[in-house]
Amino acid sequence: MPYEMFRDKPEEFLDRIFNFTNINPYYPELYEYINISPQNTERKNILTQEQKRLILQIQEQSNKKLAKITNICLKKYGYYA
Image (cartoon, one colour):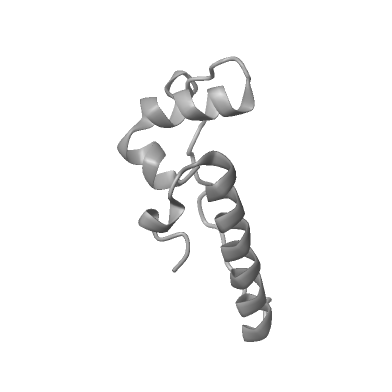
């Protein structure tokens, strides 16, 4: 499920994910610690350009499979071209 759907339509996103996964509902707004980012984190470039390209290619293929399984058009959210 795309982040954009969660951001734009959180109720629909949650309904679909709970239904798809067949789990009991969980509502993030009830938990204050969700989406808290650690401060002062340092990023290091540890991947080569070729590794980044390969990861993006794998991610695109995975997103296409996920779109088919969930019946959600991830392409309209920019998850693949």
